Structures are given as structure tokens and as C-alpha cells.
Image (cartoon, rainbow, N blue to C red; front, top):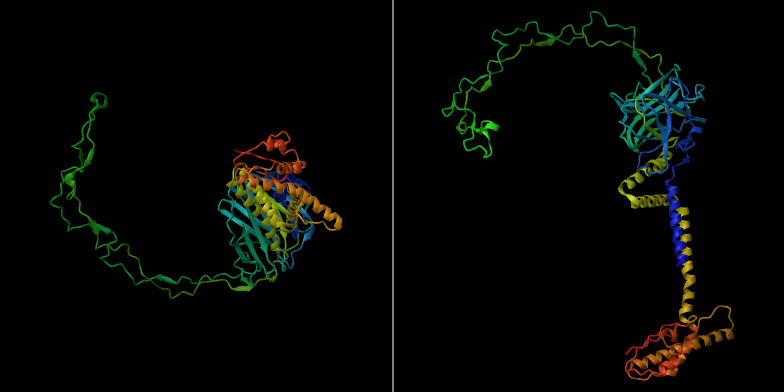
Length: 577
């Protein structure tokens, strides 16, 4: 029993260890070019801007409860109405040429964002990157994330693209930007995928919101690739150019009987007042059935007046002043408008002539963006409490998907379980679910450990079973021989087992005779049985209250009916009359 408790305690400790491991924040992601979980030593990797324009501070802060992943923290904007900037520079630039690029991060709002940004910038690898921190002129390649202020409320995706024709940088804005999710106390996952096929896909919480193409002129403004032709800036519309398609008909005139002042409605001249109409009766009269309350005091409450009710005399047709109903005026025509005709001088809509675009180029692979030299967060926000976490940069979308499963999805599921359960029961459910998730993600080592524990339990039970059988049955089953024993030794063991079994046989015979009724129990047989089993312990005659001498005690017993209950391994006799 003690061994079983030790085994159960081992299984329990294993489950707790698994739960603790599963609950720990993710530290690294296989296949990621960069991953930042904002652990306690984040300041050794990130540099807060020392530029005078950025006075805002950053705080290493936990999520709003329920956290879902205990101990997990992110980097949070610390001040209202200030500019904030922090950056991390890569040791080696990330070159997405031919592979595409993925950027992903989690955003947690502790306060309502009314005016401010919550986006990331992938910094362009160049000599302009300053190891002293972010500056206003620090160049970026991609800006991605929510921005909300006034009429703006969207998830930005801006690509800074360098023209191969002029060498100038130009920002290309995604036209159909999705609406962000910024509810207070919620965490949301933002993912941008620039594919090697020149597609741009934006996801929120692993759900695709927008898919565009860098090659389509209607998806970005201005287009990534400029048009071949442009308007001639020197072309002007001639003074005699007529672009009015319709003109007033000069021959049209307003008819003489056209009355623009005629009303739309007039009184019906054919209507007459009904005979049952009561012009002198009011619409409401005092209720004739009402009476003043018994406690009404005219001196204190004033003169009592009955409440008003509809006048029953008005029901047939009506009461009061009678007025003719309104009908449409047959003479009404409205305001007269002169008719339009085609303009005989119309030339057409003027447009400047087209000329070749001197800045034209065609980039067939705009997804091959400039190498990325770092990650920066540069914001001007009126609210604090914007928390960033689990920033990832990779070239394979599957890496980001796997990281989201272990961070965002795991936290969301754990938080939901915590919200459903209260007290110790909810906590137990939480840690058991984490243990299950850990076992699912680490099936091989967990399976080996479980098999080892089960094998230990089975081995323990198998080893203890023969020992219990030997204690209960006097040494085992007849005919059992251990391997390697000689014939003489085996025969001696059989004789010893038979000698131990003989007293038990005599006890069974004596009991049978006693049950047949009135048959005197053979004290010598019973005594021999008792004596033969006395070596098993003092549970024989002494246990029955015969002072250790069951032979002499049983010689004087004469019972019409006796019941003897014998237990293997002892000599307990119970006599009942």
C-alpha cells in the first residue's frame, strides 16, 4: 500500500511538472529569424530611444487577468500623450529575397485606444540605423499594425519601396485595410505575410482579413509599379473647347396657363358636414360617474373636479369646428423648367494628352524587399496601456502558425478555462489542461514516462502476489517446484507441505461431523489440527478464549448443533448453541 502511494505521488508530481512546463512562456521558436517574448532580461536586447523627441517610457507588464499563461509579460507603453520608441537591431540582416517575409505579434489593450498607433516597423538594414536607439529619421521597410484616431481606424500595411529608375523611396499603402480589434482587456494576434508570389495577406487571430497583390495597381496607393504613361503637364485645355453636352432649348417657353404659385393641396369643394356632427359639443366632458373621494377636504385640497372623458356625443361623426378635407389640386403643375437639347458645339470631355512616364519601371518581384536590420516600435499615442508581446519575424508562414499555436491560442484557451472555473476546481482544471497540452506537444517523452510508471506498478503487484499467497496458503501449491532444485530437496518440500495441510483436512472433517447434528466432535482430531496450526501464530486457541489449550476445552463441549468456522493460517473456533 505504501508503495502504491509512492507511485501515485510520483504520477501527481509528474503532472504538476508537465503543467508548469506547458504554462511557461515560450522562449524561442524553431525556424524563426527573430522571436522576442519579452522575458525579464528584455532590456539587454532592446534599446529605448535616447532621442529628445521620444520621452515616453516602457514598462515590463503582465497581461490583464485572467492571464492564461502565468508569468507571461509583454512590453507596454507607459505614458499618455507622449512619443515612444524602442528598437532591437539584428546581428545579421534578414534577407527575404526569394522566400518572402512574415511578421507577427500579439497586442493586448489595457485601456481604450482613442487616438494612437499600435504598429511595428521592420527597420531597413542601412548605415542610418543608430545603435543609440530609434530616431525620427530611422528608415523602415514595412510598417504593420493598428492605427486609430479620428476618422482613421485600420490595420496599416505600408511598404517602403525604392524606385529602380530614380532611386527614390516611396510609401505604398494597402487600400483595403481591415478594421483592428482593440477591445479593452483582450489580446489579439496580428500577422502579415509577404509571399514569394507577390501577395500580401493580413490575418487577425489567425483569420484571413485581406489578400492583395503587389503587382495590382488597384490594391496599393500609389501602385508599386507606376503607369507607363502619364498626363502631359504642359498640355492645357483650349479656350474654345466646349465640353457641355446638353444646353437649354432656346425655343422652349413657359405656357401662359402655367401657374407656379398654385398649391399642391386644396379643400374638397364637394365635401359637406354630416348631419350628426355636433359643432357646439366639446371633445371631452367631466366624467358624470366620478365622485369626490371620501377624504377630500375642499378647504385644504380645493374644489374637486371630475376627470375628463371622451364626449359620447362625438362618436357618430365628430364635435367642434368642422373643416373640409384636403384633396390634390388639379391645377398644380409646380415650377416650370426649360427643356434640354444636345449641344451642337459639344466637342467632348477634355483630357490632357498622355506621354511616356520618365519614372516608369516594372518591378516583377517587389516582395524582394530590402534586407531587414531590426525591429522597432515608434508611436505617438494619447493613451498608455498598449502591450506588445511575442514579436516574430520569419520567412515561412508555417513557423508563425506554430508559434501562434503555442502562444496566442494556448493563452486564449487557458484564459477561457479560467473564466469558466472558480476556486481550486478552476485552478485544478487549468493545470490539468496544461498538462494535457504538454503531453500532446511532447507525446514521445511523456509516453515513455507513463509506460515506465505503469511498468513499475505492474512489477510491484506481481512481486507481492506470491508472497501473500505463501503467507495465506502455507507455502504455495502442491507440486510447485523451483527450477534448479534436486529430486530429494523437492520431495522434502512436498512432504512438508502435506504435513502442514493435514491439520486443515482434519479440521474440515470435524466441522462436517458437527454440522450433521449431535455428533460428538473428536477432540483429538480438533486438537491435532489446532496444534498443527499453532505455529502460524497465537491466533488459535488463545483467540477463541481457551487459554492456549483448545484440546482440553473442546473435550467437554457437547452441542446439539455446532458451527465451526476455520480460517486458513489460524485455528479460530467459534461455537454457537
